[in-house]
Length: 112
Length: 114
Image (cartoon, rainbow over all chains, first blue to last red):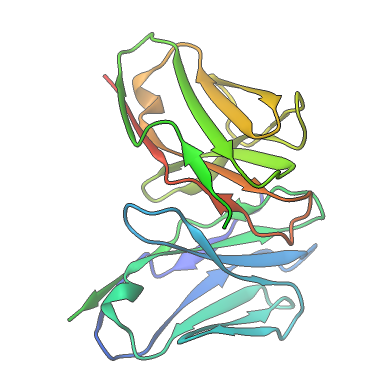
């Protein structure tokens, strides 16, 4: 069974603080790692798709790193803002097939 | 902008009813997916389709069927709704078959079966 684990399940952060959370996935047969942001009452939106060991991707204040050999990815948010409040999902793909396997998400709440 | 729409945001149905959830995408995507999301479990794949009239079972297909008669439309059918099918249902699409391609999601349908 292929499992994608995300930690922590939930996180409360003060506005302006930086934060990070983890996605763990099977290190064998790696193909791609996705990060999605899902705000309440909206559709999940893709943040990053990462494919190479050592990849680092950045979008504004959000960045992600990838270690395929040990099977983890970190998502970082610098200077958290209220609009960053959302559930962050990671998803793992082990082949060129279109199916991806999602973790249960990290729910981030930013306190003003 | 890719747009994926779902027929209802909220739906309440009775046990035993036949339920149709509709999903439409406007970007000519090959692949379409149905997921359900339950607390603590993340998104679980019910069915997906990589072409018109083609379908593949996902991880939890029991109690569901799908229909893809047109490229832009993918329907999820609950043949006889049960209370354990109360959940958030998300539709998604992607342009081609690849685990490296992002998926585009609809806003979800929150289904309650009483």
